[in-house]
Length: 253
Ligand code: PGA
Image (cartoon, rainbow, N blue to C red; front, side):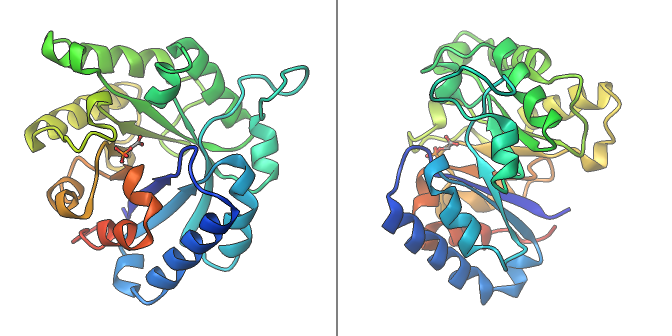
């Protein structure tokens, strides 16, 4: 199974930067057949810049367009929101749901995230569902329970191994430069996979990504763990060379 390398541009960029960034990513990857043999890429820009990624990557099968969020509702009077079917209609194939910046900063509960995940599935999109503990959760010894609860409460009945990828993102690691010990990542990923196996998902097809301060200089041992099926990358995804360098650390698929 190829590793999934996901760029989460968050609320960053401009028309010009998005054009240059996607151009540089494509130019860089196009001369690296070895990397393309081991990795698939998803780029999740702000909604306004989706057309740029869509247009620029129209002939690059290894790049898929993703969104950072979607509404739980199908359509209607929800000023400012974007529905899953609108995203699908705009060539998005994945949507991130449950990112901690939405769980915490926007107060989204696991019930809300579950509804968004279900809306994405109903529109035919795949989800990247994020879970992760805060520093307080970790220091009080509750990290695993918190992550398990988020997982069980956020994964909808519509989810299956084909339409759902999980991303383990410790909140304290996002944008901080800190990453957990490798054994901690391995343990959390194994727990997540076990919970999904209990739902009948085939173990060999389950994908659990790691996210949180992934950079070229720390990616190699993380991405080459058997339990880690890719990375969700924020800061380093805004720099084409840094983003590609992370993918280059993947040794085998
Ligand atoms: P980071 O962000 O790579 O900047 O830590 C990861 C994320 O929030 O998905």
